[in-house]
Amino acid sequence: MKSLKIGNLCASMPIVQGGMGVGVSLAGLASAVANQGGVGVISSAGLGVIYNNYSKDYRAASIWGLKEELRKAREATKGIIGVNVMVAMSNFADMVRTAVAEKADIIFSGAGLPLNLPSFLTEGARTKLAPIVSSARAAKLLCRKWFAEYRYIPDAIVVEGPKAGGHLGYKADQIDDEHYSLEAIVPEIVAEVRAFASEHDCHIPVIAGGGIYTGEDIYRIMALGADGVQMGTRFVTTDECDADPAFKQSYIEAREEDIEIIQSPVGMPGRAIRNSFLDRVKEGLKVPKTCPFDCIRTCDVTHSPYCIMLALYNAFKGRLRNGYAFCGSNAWRAEKIQPVRELMASLRAEYDSFASKCEGFSLKEKLFGTR
Image (cartoon, rainbow, N blue to C red; front, top):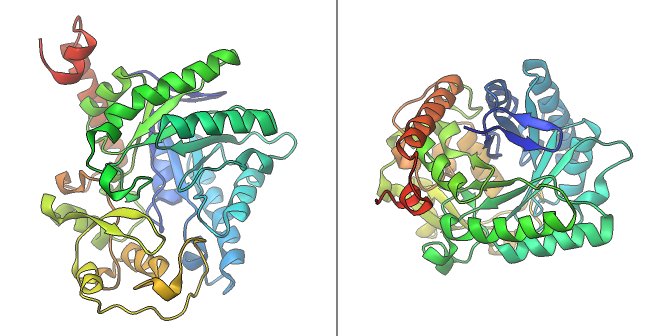
């Protein structure tokens, strides 16, 4: 298993732990992944709710919360710690500025194209920037925009396919269309990114995520040109995941038919585990009240059946009757809660085992198992 190099950062395992909000990936999970040679990622979503004891002002509490999580992570690891900041968040600028000021190693940013992300870097800042895209067209647009306006080249690019958890950057009819599958879009995006990188005599690593579950999956997607992978769902069912045990147990108990696509109040499709809360939403039993946080720019409380921030916060705290768990397409495969160390070791072993079987195989044979 090759290491993942992002500028002067080097992860001995090419695994980026996906940023999962609200509260699912904080300092506890991120530092555990970083200690095992991966890239640990703190989600900045909803920190203003988690840290509301500090301030009832959502934005002030969010800034304080991110500082605290980065501080706790730094105390627990010398490894690579990133921050996930969604473009759709109303406090996007606050979170990016805080991550840069607190010297986060890298910012991952999606849920919209972060076209102005480089503008937040300060003189001497060492924080790397990695946009999250879902198409070659988006990758090309972003690379050229960043270079034209800021003379900045992305430090890495994350490709998220339609099997990812949470909010998806796809239309409903694209989610099950094989033309938009991770396996289909990774080669297209790799080709686009490599072409741009060659123009500027550099290397931009491409990290693929969405449905990656086993070491074999990692091998197959890297055989298509990815330099590393992003995994979220696998890290939920770990001891160090920051969510309540009831949240993790919902993954263990989920059946394949429980994983469903919902229409989120933020105006995007999302993947979640069906439960009584979502059933009540479908029956029209949930009604909007007021917007307590103004957390997502695209969320319109007058047309929303519930507050997504409160729903995700309740789930994070284990109160699943009043919320629900986002998840990737393979969440139903979870069988046990295990330490991050054990999970990372098993992924490496699975990767190595499959790699040894594939020696001498063609790319087609590696990908499809035919010979």
